[in-house]
Image (cartoon, rainbow, N blue to C red; front, side, top):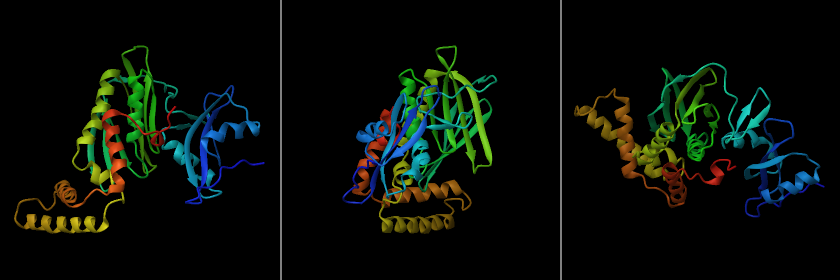
Amino acid sequence: MLIQSPPNPKTGLIPHTIFAVRVRGEDGWRLGTRPVTPDLLEKVLNDEGKEYETLRVVFQHEVLDGFGEHFIDEHTRNRGWLFDYSRGLWIAPDESILAPSGSSVEAMPDIVLNEIHCNRITFTIGAGGNEVPVWGDEFLYDPLPPIADLISRLKLGQHGHACIDDFEMHVLQTERSDFVRFIARSTVRNTKCFWLDVLCCKDTLIDKLAQFLRDLSAHPDFIHQYLLDDAYNQEEWDAALELADISWEQAVKDGKVDEDDYQAEIEWANRVVREKVSIPDQSQEFIGLYMKMLTTLDVPERWVSKL
């Protein structure tokens, strides 16, 4: 008889737990989901006669009845797990990939913020003459919690990776205790792959990654342009954008700005939005947790897979 947790009485949605199991003799994880809360998961798998060595909960959520299987890959990737196509198994966030063949140049990665606008962030990781463009969307595709979680593991002397959708960041052990192999990869529109592979000082790398997150927390546009998503007051937002357009056009006529300076126009609009759009009460808790994560690396459990 199928064991299933009762639906949420308020929403009618069915609890589902996405999990990973390691089977004896396999160097990786298999995924699954069951319509139960995490406290019932192990009993359900044992009743089914499933054999495994280790069980990890990846994510617990609520979905429409019959739709639990549709979201396994999405939620798993968004919590830092990586699928190894060569083995047909998953790699947990605290585990390293097999080191690629070939040698790596010695270089320290730099992370440069390009833009924060309209719930999207773009930045570039560069080292050894190569650059890897990265973009994020707080609602759909957010690389920042996995990066924060990776930094926390590095500080504890662990290794692993941060990955989400088309972006991967790997930190591998080397023969030198103070050096690591740093690999970053991204794919743009599934057509072009960007890659860098370098050797660098572990402590300096940690400092660089952590400083990037701290700089984001201090960025004046980060909250309004990345974290608010669609939670803002639409009337306030529309009025702010209209005011920004009018004041920008006037500034162009007065010769104060260059009409073709796209970046200046974006910054102009962002400033008006900051001044005119309030932060809703229902967003305060989430924003507080997120901003705390950027400075303390304390990632809420539901945002990554805690192992």
